Length: 537
Image (cartoon, rainbow, N blue to C red):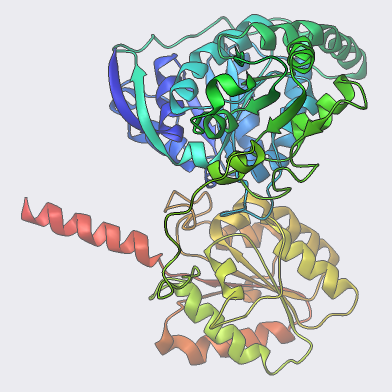
């Protein structure tokens, strides 16, 4: 055994390697990205030739992971919370097919929306799919739960969801790890065809089996080694039901131990008998959970209607945003002393496009042209270029989800908006933009699509982009007319050419695609730095 200082993401990655995985399938998305990156860079992963190439999107990641599980391998699929929406079709149906080799879907939620469009809680997906959800409270548990989760998955023949939050994913702690990794685990290929072919007759049988399994899964949550019940020294105190990282915020209060009955939850479905016991031994229950009121809503149905349950729904904890030690302390009845205020000379620093970024030149040209069209609307997408909504550009009108720029522009054009312009990045285009482009081509929509290609998945740190050097071929293959697939180099010296091409394609009565292509300044600088280092050797 040895100790390592690990991010929560890194603890999950190392736990998976040490548990004998054959591969990881993922699409980059903060705060989950470092899981796959750690595996990609780990010497043992390279020695074992583990599969760790980025997938085109989260749906393909879950489907590929399920295929590897079918073949008998232990695998993980990793994504951020909104990515699970993209993967939902495969994810939900995987609970019906079941698994063969152990399969864990790791999803990193983002309460307070530090880098996301919403703060949805992935635990709802676990309940919706009727599978076990694990929620570690510490980096140590994140590491340990990987082996536990694989064993559970293979024993119950179900995928397992592991839900973490940003503060656990991106904070470090000392983690005790194995001195030696387990060998890669491979089971024989699945043989029960009827379990994997979801025709209605098979699905009905499998779904009935899944429903019957629920009491057993609930019992597993009550007997997991990660659950904990701590008794107060006094009779009939307030009870605290602490979920995942919420348990850390509770125990940070020095008065917590001995003053409250505390039930720590790290596995779902909820262990209802343990919750009833907590209620019987407590005057009220405070639910401390980072995310939406997932547990608070459920226990109101478990306990009597007049039993006092407090949490986010009652206003005892903030209804939105992530938990903090301060807000948890206040809900526990403790006054937190503030020893300093934010200095007045410290000002906010909103995110901005990097100096030298090609997206800057794209927006400079676009703003120059769009001001000639008072009714123009620019539909944008998820990526660095979303920052075009902020000063100094203020160049975009919408940003909804991955791939929505093209389909929203098409819908607006369908009802008369002109010009309707879509701005999408290279990685986002292959993630979710291809089908929207096909719709536009099939309908002959009059839209102008800008695929701002910086040759990488830049927003999450410069991972490989699935469509690099393929975009012209993709657009032509889908049916965009060759003369209306235009490539430009976004530099100030090319501004006259870029604005001219924009005007020409806006006026074209059909689908046109402009591809401004210049490497991300950050990845370019890293390559140049590495080159200088190599030259000195």
